Amino acid sequence: MKCCFAVFVLGSIGILFSNDSSSLPNDIRWVRQSGEYKELCMQVYRQAWYQVNRQAGSSGTKLAIVVDLDETILDNSLYQVGRWRKGLGFTQESWSEWVNQKEAGLVPGAKVFLEKTRNLGVTIVFMSNRMHHNLQPTIENLKELSVWQKEDLFLLREDKQDTKDIRRKEVLEGTGRMKKVGPLKVLAYLGDQVGDFPDKSGEVFGVNQFLLPNPTYGKW
Image (cartoon, rainbow, N blue to C red; front, side, top):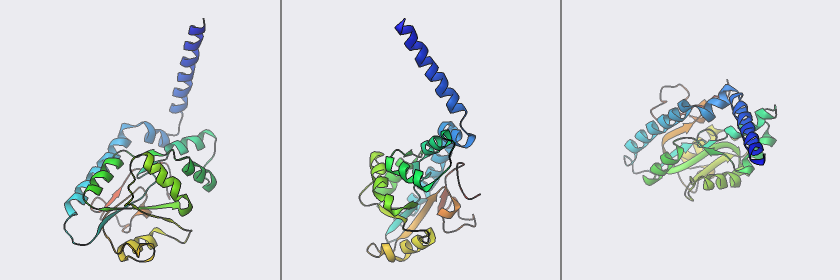
């Protein structure tokens, strides 16, 4: 009888989980379950690798790529699931709590791309609008996913005025937080929002700017 009851309970849990997953909003479910999302991400990373590999070694200057973190390297869809289940939206407080849990996963294709790019001697600059006080849990999350190296550079946001335009300029000119590093030649920019890129005209997407799919949030 206990065995039958256990089977019933496990079966019921499975049904509830299945129903819960199928009732997720389409945007979250697409990211978490669809093959299309995975293949699109891997396609973008293959295109980016092709361009980075082609350009590396063509210059005597120090080379870098500038990469966003959230929904570019780190998959935060579990945060979205948790907020949806509570009937709540984004708040800075809940986001900081999530970041400190260090439970983000990896966007498909990100790990292989970073490994191959580092092997070319190209510096990885992680440029994110995560607040700077969340740097340590961010690094620890990346370490747990085996995508962090001590040579990586981080330019997180100091305050609302610290835009990505300001930080991109520091990378290119070797000023501000990048003064000790010196100017870098950026081979590619990767992100999931148009604001992650210096050229928003669309003409260089697929050339040196690579946009990953993110249907869950943005400035639309």
